[in-house]
Amino acid sequence: MADLVANLAYDDDETPIIKITKKTHPTGTIKLIQPREKYFAIRLDTKFWRFVEDKNEDFDEWMFGCTRDLCIIFDLGKPNSRKMSQIAHIIEQKIDDLVNMPPPQQEIKVVGEAEFLIKALHGNEANIRGVVPIRDMNPVKKD
Image (cartoon, rainbow, N blue to C red; front, side, top):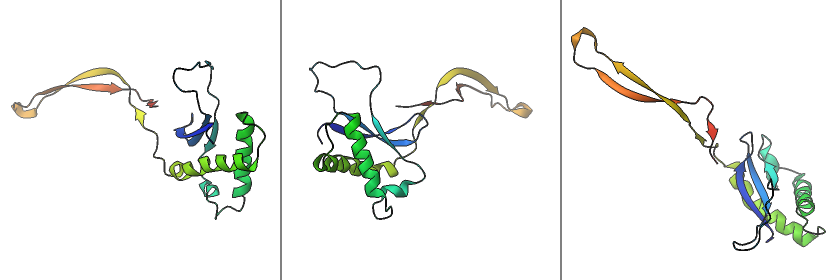
């Protein structure tokens, strides 16, 4: 369906998700500024077997619920078999990638520096000076 776009992302607690949004207008057209982007998320949890059609007898029912909800959330009109099939195709294209997503990368924030000096024992000439970054113990997620 041309009106929806599916991308892989991480939610606030770093769980992999398929993030489905309504396609935005091309550059150069008028955009409405919204305080928060509206999206539909399919989360990867420990029950990822449910995404496999031949292992989950409720797969069709689960997919039907997702496609119906997307039609309602994004005002795509009354759900019909053609629309729902197109939406299901968008979701199915991303499921394998969702299951194989790597853990999120974290940016380490440097909050200062410390200088050090190492002196050799017994009079050897092996003094070493250096500067080491001090890192924040609460890493920030990298978008």
